[in-house]
Length: 285
Length: 179
Length: 48
Image (cartoon, rainbow over all chains, first blue to last red):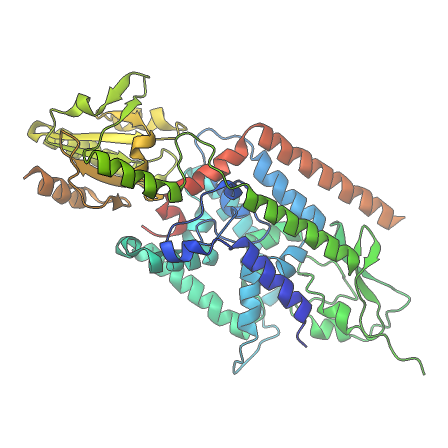
C-alpha cells in the first residue's frame, strides 16, 4: 500500500531543503544565510539546490579544524532533532531516504526482505559514525572522511554541479570514480532492498537511532489491543517487529505498521499523547 | 494527525525563516549573484586588476608592491582546505625556482585557523595576504582558485583555474605565461 | 509511571540540546558552518 500522505511530505521536505533552483542551471551553490542552519536529513551542502548545511558535513568540519573547539552548535542542533523526532526524520524528512523509497518502488526481479548477515550489517553504520564522522576527521585534520570517501548525497551533488559547470569535470579523478561506484551500488541495492543505505551505512541515521526510545515523537503499542497477530512485523520494511519493540533503533517511523494494524493497537505519540490516525479497526461482529 | 501536522508546520516555518535569512554577513564574502554585476562594472572602468589589503603581520599591501614581477600568480586558498595545503610546498618550490625569471606568487586567504603553522611548516617565502573585495570577481565558489596577472595587473589567465594541481602541471602553466 | 520518566528525560534532552546549540551560536560557530559553503574545498565533496 502506498502512503500518499507520507510521500507528499517527503517530496515537500526534499524540495524545501533544495529549493535553490537557480543553482542547478548556474552550477553555483547557494551561499546565503540559510547555510548557517543544518537541515535535519542527509542533504549535501554542495547540492546546487541546497538551502541549508548538512549536519554530518558540518560536524566533520567542526571536528577537523586545527584549533579544536567542541562543536556545540552542530551537535546541539543534531541532538535537538534526535530528541524531538528520533528516526522519524529518516522516515519523513530525509531527501536521500526519499530517493531510496522511490527506487524501491521501481519493479525489480527480486525484492529481498532480509538476508544472512543483515542483522550484523546493521551495526556497521555505528562504526561509520564513530570512525568516519568523528575519530578520523579529528585525528587527521582538514578531512571530512565520510563526505570525501562515502557520502552518496555528495556524489549526487557533484554530478549535478559538474553537469552545469564543465570546469569540475576536468578535475574529477579516481576519487570521484570511486564515489560514483558507491552511489551506483546504493542505487542498485535500493531497488532490491528497502533503504539499504539507512540500514547499513548512514551515520546520521545511526545518531538519530540512539534517541529512538526517548524521542518526543515515538510509537506506542496498546497492549490491551495488541493480539500479536504479526501483521505489523510483516509490513515493516526495516524488518522490525513493532509489537515486540515499537521504538527499535532500526525503526524509521514510516508509519506502515500504524496503518496496517487491524486492531488499531499502534499509534504515534507526542510526549505519550496519541497523535494521528490509527490503523483500520477490526470490525466488531 | 493534528499534532504531527503542527510539528511539520513548525519545521516548515523554520525552513521558510531560513529562506528569509538571505543576506551576506561577512565583509570578505560576497554573494555569488552580486559578484557578476560588480565584476562587470569594475572591468568596464578598469581592465587591470588592483587591490589594497594587508599581509599576515598587518602591513599594508597592494598590487604595486609586486609591479616588478613579470607574472603574478594569485592563489586563493583556505588553511582548512586539505588540497590547498598540499599545494603549498609545490608552490614554494616553483617560486624559489622561477622568481629570478620574474615569477611572483601571492597566497590569498580568508580564514586564519592553522595559517601560521603551515607557513612555518613549509617555510613559505612568498607573501600571504588577506582576501578583500577586489578578489571577489575571481571567486569561483571553490578553493583553491588561481589566476594570473602581469606586473601591471593585466589579466593573463582567461578564466581562474579551479582546484589544485600537481607540481608538474603548475610548472607548465607558469612557463606558458613566463614566455 | 515509566512513560512519565521517559518524557522527563526527553524534555531534559531537548532542553540540553537547545542550550548547547545556543551556546554554539553565542560562540559564533554557525558562521563557521556558513564559511565552508562560501568557498568549497572540492576534495571534501569527492571532486579533485
